[in-house]
Length: 117
Image (cartoon, rainbow, N blue to C red; front, side, top):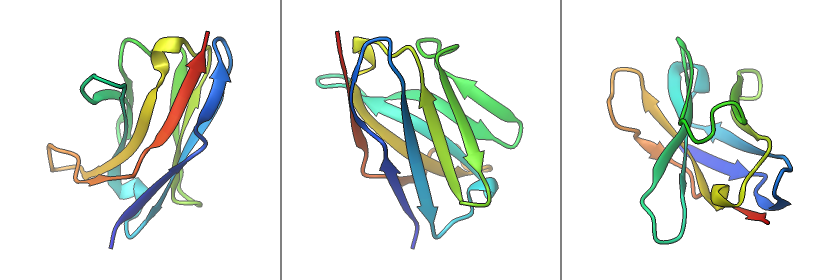
């Protein structure tokens, strides 16, 4: 049974930093594409970042501020959020998909990130 558990969310001031973590069980993160998504109130869920065998990818809105990384020993992925803005306020989700599958198959419950101005 696959489980993804996000942690590290909370309240942070604009310009500050926050680090989200996603602990995986039931799958090996190095064998999956691992993504981060977010959903703000009244908005659709959007892509934030991903890490695959070929590298990392980021949404334009977070490029240069957010970094995703993978710790194979801990079977976890992280999202380092720097210079956060109020518009980064959202529920952040960790997701996983097999490399040959187009859609993300597994999702965490999400963690709330609130950025105050």
